[in-house]
Length: 80
Length: 203
Image 1 (cartoon, one colour):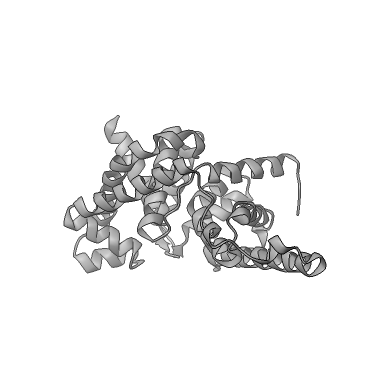
Image 2 (tube, rainbow over the protein chains, first blue to last red):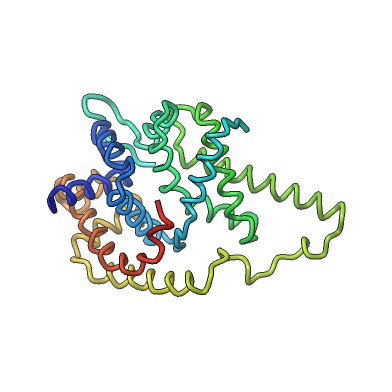
């Protein structure tokens, strides 16, 4: 279980660096579909990536609000 | 934008593949692009419009616009370059509209920005969390084993891909992948306690 989580998180880390094969990307996306732990790894690793790169901003609901608005947009079938 | 080697084929790009999948209806693929780039887009807009109160709204507009026009992204053009151009256009449009309003109404409040409002409009709670969080990140980086820290810095500061890092530090590519993952996970363990309060407000 611990090993599986480690493998998943290593995969996510590599996805964020753009360093995976198409099959690995497909596998990562399948895991990310509504998977809370893996999504947490994505958000925390990306926060670290941005912070090390000099962008030091919390994501206090920012992404969620973008995605909520996108969902509303898609549901309404809007094309801008 | 780094490219990886596609198994059995030429170079390919993860972001391009995420766009392709999003075009085909995989919303998780687009959500991942939002998570990856929202801070960079927001930072770019913040630098252009210099008004904290409109950054979030404009950032949302950028991603909605990108989603609607995914088919316009040409092969070979990096997603970041493309969405960065959308962000510049969105910010320029906002500034033009604002200037028109100022010209038309000469609203005193619209003509000057408060220098104290040029950062994200953060609550006191957010400010405290942010200070503790970024201090914890710095501390965690300083405590990393040298190999992990070197690999992470070569990736994030120098922008090298895994192959180039492997050549630089003299280890196999798979080892670089593992070193960078272990570095991030070590840092993550130190920062997660500071993020508990915001977990429900993250992806």
